[in-house]
Image (tube, rainbow, N blue to C red; front, side, top):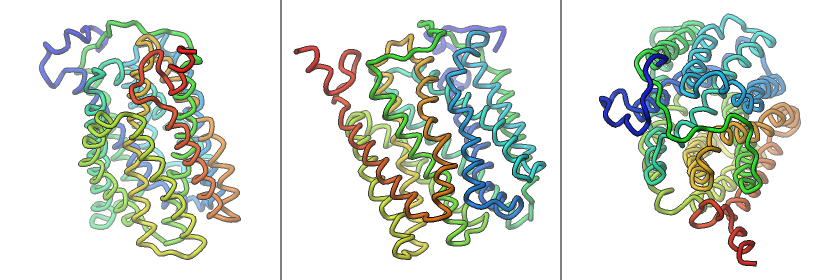
Length: 409
């Protein structure tokens, strides 16, 4: 990758396996493999081995989000290395740290490994989004992003199947599973480094922070999405373990259902975004989330059962695929030179709530888990209101429903 440089416009002449979309697909397969290993084992590992309660888990998740909060630092790093290289190095870091996670089964040990793995995870995702929006054509971006989500879901599915089989049949322990998931991630990342040329886009990205007034709605949507995501990731899965006593293979089974559904539905969701537009797709997502979080609340207030809880968990996860609508909204309204730095700034904004909420919600959880999900319902309602401000055809100068009115005034 260091010695060969290919223009993104000339990349179509390369063999299919060496083209930009194939690299995106390979990275989309690699990263979820590492994260799925960490996620599938986390709740049981911290509960059974490290003796965590909801408060400890909240602190762990807050520490995990600190690198995301400082994702804007990617702009500084990109002054020295190319985005594509940073994505690969970040995957390598994540793979190494995941591999040794079980070596540090204490509160502070897990804080350390979680922070380092999160650094790789979040820096990768920051530049990944930038590369996707630079390399994919606007006309086909929703469908291509849907396929990338599907590929990532396939990677997660394979990982969860392996964990279920090796845990139950072969009796592998936490250390063996962490070593396997991290090691394979590192190997794939090394292949991405060695096998692909550096792809140069025609538009040179700004190497400074970009914060533009006309992107304000995108920033707000990112802020709310970060808050909603944390409540799901931290507390929805922990609810299944703490309240219903799910074991590793049962939690993994839920993840399997999630990713089987995403494998088939994500490309369809991409087509839906392309046909319906970003506004309608996001309205659909947030209306659905309001009902999901209200039902989560009912599980604690009215003792609704395990079948409903598991079903809600799957439905909740499916809504994540609709987040691609926020990416294509930015692609349509942004100056091409702004995409890289704006992705970094937006990732930081996305993690403002993510750093604060898990620890704060962890304390609330100890008193009333239902209140946590009531707060999530309010977040979904605010997100719905914001999504209604997106115009039917976003474009530079038409970023919100107010933009044309201001121009015509």
